[in-house]
Amino acid sequence: MWRSTVRWESWSGDGHEHLTIEQLSDGYLARSVLLGRVEEQAFGLHYTLRCDAAWRFRKLDLAAVDTGRKYTLESDGHGHWRDETGETLPGLSSAVDVDLSFSPFTNTLPIRRLRLEEGEAADIVTAYVAFPGFGVSPDPQRYTCLKKDALYRYASLDSDFTRDVEVDGNGLVTLYPGLFKRTA
Image (cartoon, rainbow, N blue to C red; front, side, top):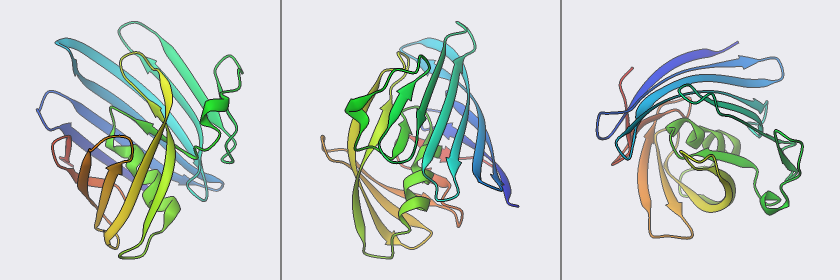
């Protein structure tokens, strides 16, 4: 079984993430701790994220350290989403992946799941989790493989935001210009 520990720093240098991901018999489990600042307010978060063996998102448990606020999001990998109360989230029916605004790790999910060859692109919809409010909304995106297992273009399909994201052989971000850089 595969296991990796990585660390990222925000581009500004005032945010840090420590993540351990491991392969399980039925998928992948990531555990992470984040420290940072939003609008001059310091925060601490920890999350656990599970994916199935095909890298389809299954469950997120998220907690703010300072306030104790918790959030859970689950999916069956086929467009059926619900929150911690069990309420169905029909607005996310076209989403397969989750995208955490505060972590480069969630780019790994579509990169690994899609298995794009060089020059191929795919349009997807993610369940975008914003911080600090933990609001969730559908977010259309495009991933283009520029160099297999090394460089992918991320493009938001509802804005003009585009970045060429460098990854390692496991699909973990090493450089996300303007947002994150890997430190270990």
